[in-house]
Length: 110
Image (cartoon, rainbow, N blue to C red; front, side, top):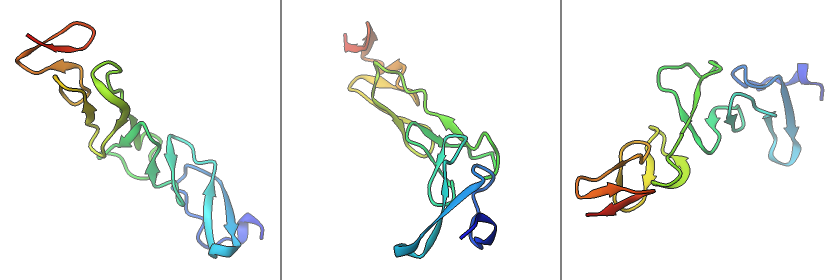
């Protein structure tokens, strides 16, 4: 089925290609851009979170997590942009130490 015939090809401007998956009877966006993913490019890729002040069709709808590589458990964050911190690390990006810790290529207890 040509793309023009798809009724449900809504990708919020993050893709101009859709594919019909016959056995699921669903139309899905293909090659989502702007760090988006999902059937309608409505979710952010891992390592990105939703920009609450941007509309779904905004190119800047997904913001990179930028978790501190040393202070965070991994490079993914939650839906509000907070990273999961290692023991002793703190802050949204895990780039600070708790009051009882000091920074030395990571947060260590005093």
